[in-house]
Length: 605
Image 1 (cartoon, rainbow, N blue to C red):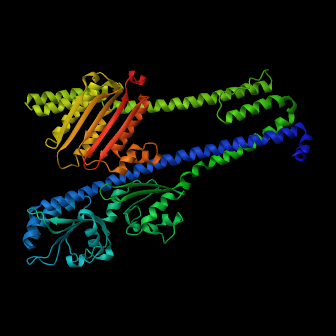
Image 2: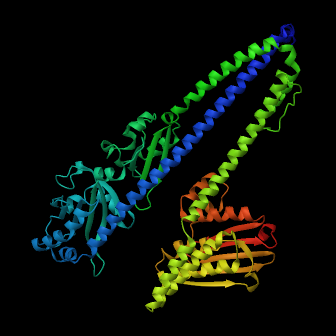
Image 3: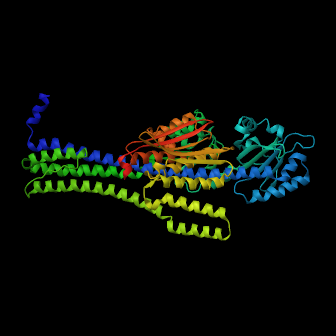
C-alpha cells in the first residue's frame, strides 16, 4: 500500500484532483443514468403488463359470452318440443323438417353457433344416422358407434358431469366435409319427463371465426387461447389453431425446446425474462387467454437514455478537467466540502447545504448547489403532491358520476308512480334501494354510526329477500348500547354481499345469514355468519395470509377477495387495534368477525 501511495504523493494538485474528482463524477452520472433507465424500463413494462392483463381479461369476457350463448342454445334445444319428439319418438323427415325450421334461424342470426350434432342412443325405431345441421342447412357426420371410438367420447366420459368443452380437428372427420377446426360443447341430452340420458348434444363454432371475433386490437401483441393440454384453440394467427404451444414461433424465439411437453409450455414462457406474458383463465371453459409481447422491443425507445448518459459523462469530464486544472488551489477545501455533501445527496439526504461565503465563483457554485438541492427536493415533493391530487381527483370524478340528488329524485318519482298504481311491493323495493344509495354515500363522510350501517345492511337484505323469497332468511342482532358506535362506513355490507354470493346463490336449499353486533370484554365485535357450503381449507389459509405478495395478487383476482382485502386495509388505516378473522368449515358454513378495541383513538375521528 505504501508503495502505491508514494507516486500519488508526488502528483501535482491538478493531477490529484483529476484522479479523485473525475472518476467520482463519471460514476455519479453513470449510476444516475443507469438508475433512470431501470426505473423508466420498469414503469414501461409495468404499464404494458397491466394493459396486457386488461386485454386478456377483455378477451376472456368475450369468450365467456360466446360460451354462455352456446350453453343457452343447448338449454333451448333441451326444452324444444320438436327436438324432444324427434329424440323420443324417432327420426322422421317431418320431425327433421320441424327441428330445422325451429333451430336454423337461431343459428343464422347468432354470432357463434355454426353446427349442431344430435346423437340419439340406439333404438329400434331410430336410424343410425345422427341429426346434423349447420348454419347453411342439413349436413352429415359419423355415426354414434364411430364417434364412441374417438378421443372426444373418451374425454366426455371422464369429464365432470359429462360436460366437455373441446375442439374437433378436421382430420378426425367427425363432421363430413367440414375443414374447419371446431370449438365444441359436448353434453348429454336427457328425457324431459324422466330426466334419463337419451342422447348426446354437440354444438360447434368455427375456431377461425371465433378468433376473428375475439381478437381485434392486438396492439402489437400475440394473443391466443389454449386448453390445459397446451393446444391452441384460437389465435391472432389462424395458422396456429390446432397446434401445441411448443410449436409456435414465439416459443422457439423464447428458446424453448421442441421436446417440451405442451402442457408445461405456458409455464416456461412465463419464466422467460425476454417476454411479458399475461394469462387469464375462464371460469366457464377453464381455458387460458394468453397475451405475449417482446420485452426488448417495448423498451427499445429507452436506449436514448444510455446515449444521453454517455454524452453527459464526456461533457462533465471535459469541463471538470479544465476547471480543476486552472483553479485547483482555490477550490480544494470547498470542493472537499462539496464532495461530502454530494455523497450524502446520493443516498437521499436532501437537507444538504454547503453555504459557501463570498460572491466569487466558489460562492456562486455553493449557492447554485444549494438551490439545486432545494429545487430537487421541491420537485420531489411536488411530484408526490401531484400524485396524491391526481388520485383524489380521479376518486372525486368517479364519485361525481352519480348525482345523488338526481338519483334520489328519480327513485322518489318511481316510488310515487308505484304508489299511484297501488304497487306497494315495488314501492318498498324502491325505498330500500334509495336508502342503500343514501347510506352508502353518507354525504361523502368516511364514518357512520353502527345503527346506520345496520340500516344499510337491513335494506340490502330486504332487496335480496325479494330476489330469493324462499331461499334467503336473515336475522340481525345489535346491542342497544352500540347503536351510536362510530365506525368506518361499508364494513358490514361487503361481508353480507359475500355471504349472498357464496352461500345463497350457489345453494339449492335454504340459506340463513346472521348479522350480529355485540361487546365482549374490551372489544366491539361485528359478525356475519351463514350456513353456506363453506370455504376450502387451502383457500381459507390464502384469504387469511395477507402478508404474502402472491396471496394479495390472488385475492385481487376475485370480487370477494378484493372486498376482504379492502376491509383489511381500511381497518389498518383507521384503527391501531383491530382484528379480522374468518372461520369456515366445508358443508357447515362461514363466520367472519371484525374485532375493534373500544376507546381506539382513531375511532373518535
